[in-house]
Length: 173
Image 1 (cartoon, rainbow, N blue to C red):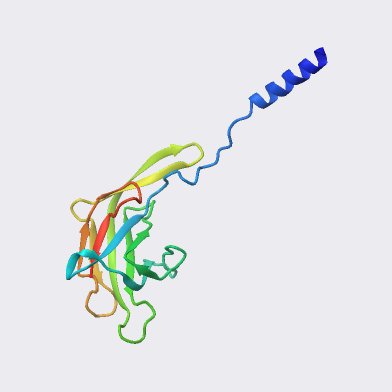
Image 2 (spheres, rainbow, N blue to C red; image 1 turned 30 degrees about the vertical axis):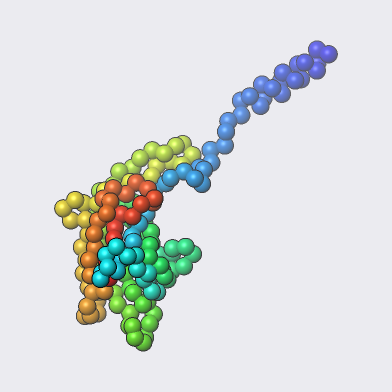
């Protein structure tokens, strides 16, 4: 009987020293992406779907993947900002790949921001939160081809980017 009690105590002490696995829960908020909503320029309260929009970071060949696709057809998109720089530049190409009317049209947006690394947990590490520059949050220019900008107006809706639950930027076209 004493041996059984000792065995049970030994097993209890062995398992009592175990720690919870350090796994970052999928529901934990990590570095947020910039959420952009698209609106109709003629009726600013109406969301407007973009057609075959491709968003490509400067010096990259692959487009941003959103909802498992590199072509965006919808009124909202989330794109990552750099965690190691205070500037991220993207090419926004509407009607990407089109050779007929409407023809592809490229505009470029440079996002200017500051970064803050915030500790999440031992399992998740740090996340980066962003604040768009209040004086100059973005720079909108026409693409390489000399055509008119398809993006008519950009408005900052929320300058702090700490989660993806809200729109940060509105683009009117």
